[in-house]
Length: 112
Length: 114
Image (cartoon, rainbow over all chains, first blue to last red; front, side, top):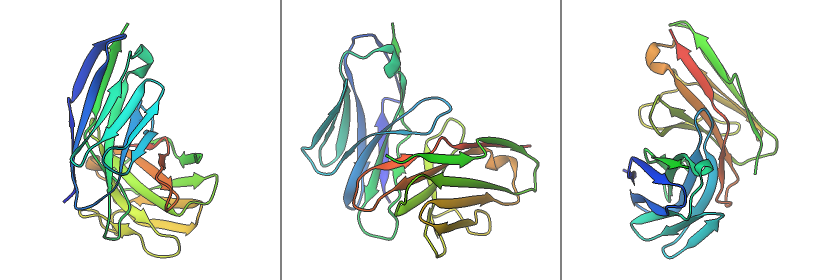
């Protein structure tokens, strides 16, 4: 069974204080690892897809990296508007389903 | 990216009734999924909506409770049948194109069952 574990559950940072969110996963075969941002009352907003170990992707203050067992979402010099829940999900190879298995998310608060 | 419209955005329903949620996409997509997000929880995949054939359900979800239709490549419906308070959740539609590693979500339909 595919599993995704995110840590920490919650993180409070000061504006400008860089940090990383962790996503560890267990999957029979990885087709893709996805990162989303979710604001309260909204649907998840797509950020990145990573496919293979060593891959990195960046968008503004966010950088996602991938190893064979985990992914990190690095947040550099965050701003209050980066406050949100960040979700990690995996898409597995094989079988008939292409849907995602999600972790429980990291609730990030950036204080001014 | 795709523009996804879900209706209704929210509803309050009585126990024992059924509600149908619609998902409309502004362009043709090969993949459509339905997820549930219970209060304070992450997303759980309910089923894959297959165009022109029966949906593929995940463990713990059955067609009698969550019938799904997908008549074409831009539209799908999810019905929550014989509702109980435990069905109070946000239901989300997700779409993507096979071979392109991006999956997008609608804004969700917030369902409260009394």
